[in-house]
Length: 219
Length: 219
DNA sequence: ATATTGAATATTGGATCCAATATCCAGTAG
DNA sequence: CTACTGGATATTGGATCCAATATTCAATAT
Image 1 (cartoon, each protein chain N blue to C red):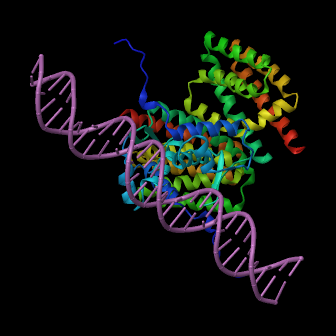
Image 2 (cartoon, rainbow over the protein chains, first blue to last red):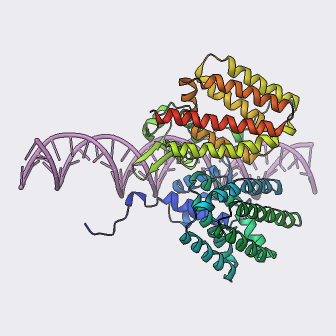
Image 3 (cartoon, chains in turn purple, green, brown, yellow):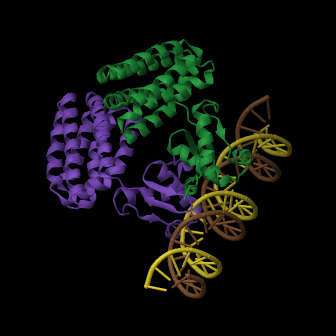
């Protein structure tokens, strides 16, 4: 039978739609740290009832993106400088290993894809897109490692600090340096030098951590 | 005012109680891989409605302990050998770093506590307790590292493979070897030798991985 | 006998309603 | 004027009901 088929059983429930929208709003920084999430208000915005909203919020809490207190509601979970630093340390540990194991398995197609994201990142005039393209670039490289659990954990770590990185990319000269470092990482990958790619990734993450620490302290 | 006070706002909701009970049942292997979780049945067991049960299940899904399909329900998420192996590799990476950073900060009190768990583990006649005491031992050592995010991530990784480890501890001679390795790790910690503790932890985890692989292949 | 259809049942997803708790504010005592 | 009390309002947690989908199984056609 010739028919463009779709797996209907995987269509999104209302709860999933709300979850993804809230997650996006949080990691992009559209919802401020500490901002309360009112079930009623969100339900009205999505034209649904509070039940799927509650499910979405409880999932976000499990992901560490919101904190809730019984009968008081949920607020966006912000990170202290110490907490954010720890997440960076964690990323450094895991992402270095991921890219080390990814490099030997990168196909030319994948490298071309990563290069495209890298160039988009450098060329994009819209700061709102930087965070996305940054993640797409790194994600493309990491995807070659064939370690789905590692990648899912890194994604969650990234979710927690994404909004701070975005803010900092916009406010400082972080954009320029990020771009130079991306090119260096990409080059190491293209040459098949896993150790160098890992070392550069380490520097990239530690640099971002230091820069963010500077930025958060001054605030 | 002298009064033994309790923070009532942190008392557990029905959803939390169900979540924790299901989580425990899954990681202890009481619920088989692939076993469906019927909302109605669970609700009746806890004498509540399906609403908190659904919230519990959606949290479990976010933790990766169950998988659900729209309108079909949730089942306990089992791991293939490859998936389990990846989780072990991840644990090796993170737990080594955690114990390396924990060793310099271990107080005599903490070491005594860890030794107590270690001895309980060795002496416990009840296989049902082994998994618990094993986690308490490692958890006690790790708690000194003051890296709460790392620890929470390790906990989640452990949740995913706990039931397989338990089954294997019971069925093979894993218990004996685990005990010897625990003592060696503890000794390294007491001597303040972080690198040795990390190396022993690595061997401990890789040994468990190999042993589990053997066990899963034969099944 | 096997495959297909359609009704009956089971199960999940969501809406609405009620109860429990928190928050806010006016009133009152000191 | 300040601190406490009590009620009005807002918000969350849970129960019940309804709609949408899946599953099972009997009936039927080939």
